[in-house]
Structures are given as C-alpha cells and as structure tokens.
Length: 145
Image (cartoon, rainbow, N blue to C red; front, side, top):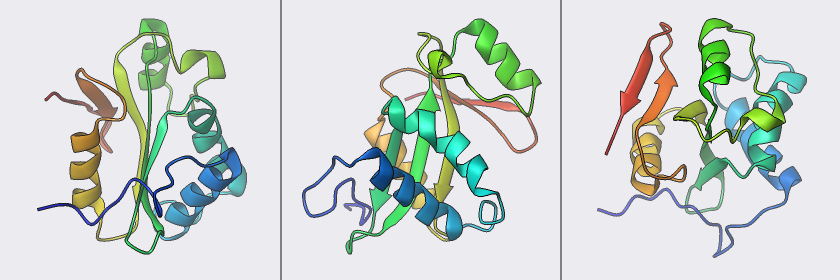
C-alpha cells in the first residue's frame, strides 16, 4: 500500500530556506513536545540542517507539512560531545565530517509518527548505512537495513 505521506507538493520538491523553516515550525506548533520552545531554539535545530540539505519533509495530500527529520554525519570527537553534553549543538562544520549517520531531530503531527518513520526509513534521505539516534532515556539506538 502506498503511503499517503508525500515528499512533494503538486510536483514541487525544492523549497527556499524560508519555506523549509516555515514547514518545520508548522510541524512543531502541532506537536506538544515542541510547541512551548522559544523560536530561537527552533532556528538552532533546523537552520544548519536546511543549509546542509539534511532535512526531509513529508506532506499530506493537501500539501500541508506533517513531518520532518534531520540528520548529520559527525566525526568521532563531535559524536562524543553530542552524546555527553545535552546542551551541545553542532557547529556548521560538524554536520558533514564523514562520520556515522545520526538522526538529530524528528517531529510530526500527532498520530503520524509510525507512518512518517516508516516512510523516512523507506526513503533513506541520509543514504546507506547504519543509522543512530539517542533515545529519550539517553540510550544509543541503531537500525540498519
């Protein structure tokens, strides 16, 4: 069965940085885990992902953004800081250090989490290889395909 979540809106899959920031904010405002964060925080989480083209959006049939995911390829030293310091944010130069694939952020409208994750895993916008992320209880999780 084809997922109703789409990568494009009316055939368009390329957007300006401002449009992408707007899509991310739209997703965040509908998610209770994000909606109370200050706007500056939102920019910190998405700006470099957008600049490095390491953010992927999914839309519904009407073209409304429903989910996004960001990823990076930090080197070993950066990865160590990422895991040990909860306040650490990647510097622009640390997003593509040819390291392991790390999911940095995932946000979606309530009720779309499983479907969005399934679709992102199918699309693999980050490329091939094992994918890592930090769980809510601070455990390193990995999946491969």
